[in-house]
Length: 320
Ligand SMILES: NC(=O)c1ccc[n+]([C@@H]2O[C@H](COP(=O)([O-])OP(=O)(O)OC[C@H]3O[C@@H](n4cnc5c(N)ncnc54)[C@H](O)[C@@H]3O)[C@@H](O)[C@H]2O)c1
Image (tube, helix red, strand yellow):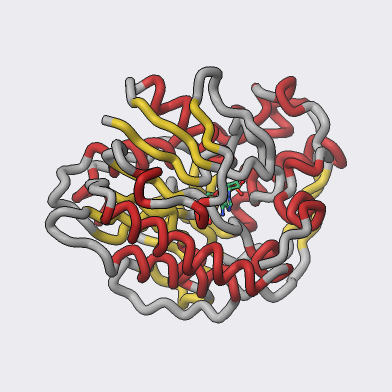
C-alpha cells in the first residue's frame, strides 16, 4: 500500500512517518517545508504547494493523509484569508483530485477546535458545533468539504483531534503540554491562563496510532471521529506537568494562575473511534513530559523560531 502524506513534514507528519516505517508502510510526502525537513532518511519529499497538485500527481497512491494548512489559532488570526483558503478549500481540492485519480481513501486532520465553547459535557460527533473563530470555522469547512466526497469507491475519514502534544523530530513548543514543559524547565514556572477550561490532550504516539488505524480500517468505513488520549482541565494539565518536571529535574516549579477568558472549552467522547476504528489510546501526560525530556538533546534551544508556528509564519510572510 502506498500513502501520500500531504503536509507530512510538519509536527504530526514527521512523527507519523517514523511509525509508518515501523509498520512497514510505503509513503511519500508533499510539503512546502515551512519548518524544514526532519523526515526519516530515505523519505521521498515532493516540495510542492498542494494547490499546484494535479490529478496525475496522485496516481499510484492508495490513500492520502491530509496534514497541511494553518495549524493553530494565532496563524489563522494573523492571516484569516489564507486560513480559510488553506484549511477550507485546500483539503476539499485535494480530496476532489484524489478521488478522480482513483485513490481509495482520504484521511483528514480535523480538530476538536470546531466544538468551540461547549457546555461541560462530553461531546460526541453528533453534538452541535459552535465555533465562531477563524481556525475552528475553517477546519469545519475542510471537514465538510472532504466528507461531501465520500462514496462506495472513495472512503473519507475525518479525525477530530485533541491538542497533539509530545516530541516530534519537527518540534513545536506552542502546544499546551510542550509549552508548560518548556517554561517549567526554563523559568521554573507555568502560567495557567484559565484553570477551569477543558481540553482534550492527545499524545503524539496515540495520534500516529489513530492514523494507522484509519489506514487499516475496512474501506467500507467512512466517517467523522473524535480522537484524543483523555480530557483534562488546563489546571489539571499544569499540576501534572509540574509534578513530573519536579520529579525529573529535582526543581521547584511555581504555578501562576490567571483568570483570562478563553473562547475554546470542550471535552470529547472517543467511543465511536474505539468501537469502529479500534482506536486505543495509551499515552498519559506524564508519558508526554518524559518523552519530551528524553529528547532534550535533539532540540536544545527552546527559542528556535521553527518551534513556534506563528513566528515562522510571520517570517515567511505569505499572501493569499
Ligand atoms: N498539532 C495539533 O495539536 C493539531 C490538532 C488538531 C488538528 N491538527 C491539524 O493537523 C494537521 C497537522 O498539524 P501539525 O501540528 O503537524 O502542523 P504543522 O504546522 O507542524 O505542519 C503543517 C505542514 O503543512 C505544510 N503545508 C501547509 N500548507 C501547505 C501547502 N499549501 N502545500 C504543501 N504543504 C503545506 C507546512 O509546510 C507544514 O510542514 C493540520 O491540518 C492541523 O490543523 C493539529
